[in-house]
Image (cartoon, rainbow, N blue to C red; front, side, top):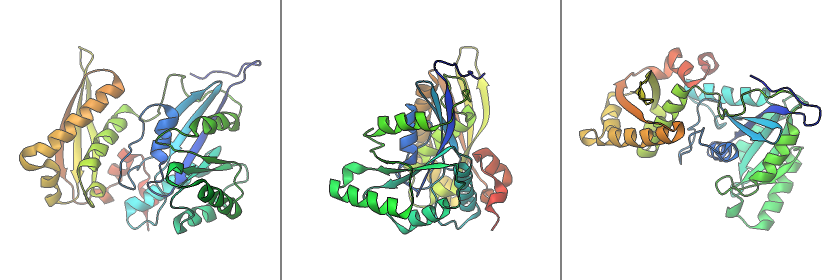
Amino acid sequence: MTTEPQDDNPTRAGFVALIGEPNAGKSTLLNQMVGAKVSIVTHKVQTTRARIRGIAMHGPAQIVFVDTPGIFRPRRRLDRSMVAAAWGGASDADVVLLLIEAHRGLTDGTQAIIDQLKELGQGTSVALVINKIDRVKAEVLLALTKQMNDAYPFTETFMISAEKGYGCPQLRDWLARAVPAGPWLYPEDQIADLPMRMIAAEITREKLTLRLHEEIPYQLTVETEAWEEKKDGSARVDQVVYVARPGHKGIVLGKGGETIKAVGQAARAELEEFMGRRVHLFLQVRVRENWLNEAERYDEMGLNFKDGDG
């Protein structure tokens, strides 16, 4: 269902891509803008794998955010698919927001992104968003703003703290005016276009990422294998955690199963809050040593397997 523009209050709708280096705060900004948790946020880089769309309503405007994976130098097939997804999200968007961290400034990685941005079509509006402004002094921000705008002709520059919400209302106001006039793309009460099965898997993967260390979070994936609606209004959700090595299974399970139990409890609590009803969550851990090279796993993550071809 879409809403047609009215003459006295025309609706607007468009896609806004969030791009930047890993850990720049894209997922935090998305959740801040939408007002709900639709993208996982962890202290580890490269946690966003699929292009997650969050939908924000602001007056007559519907702003559809595409939270892309962080852009980095890809090494594996999964890395290459993630970077391809990020640039796919940018090239398809009406507005692109380049997010950088104030305390890191113009890094080599950000410069590489700027070089790539120059190849986007002229019809795409690109704004600079300097995040985590509470970490630096005003004179540093002013110098960084000049340096960035000398490197690329940004349409606008915004200084924000995605975590604390500073500057976000001004950014939201501008985006509401920047998206094209036209009918809304999604129902008014929808906040994300991901299937609940995928959102549930992302929530569980976030809890695993927070509990585990080093490389293991990048060697696992979570899939929702079954979803059953119960007569009492609750839902039974069965998920599988795939790990790449036999040794990782014991780490994910933990001593006496305590790690996977804690992960399941945390994921279930967040799912219940998100859905507003009871959830019965069941987790299994399976070893699939070659899952990083299985097309089916990429489909479940919303990525294109062929984009990972070297």
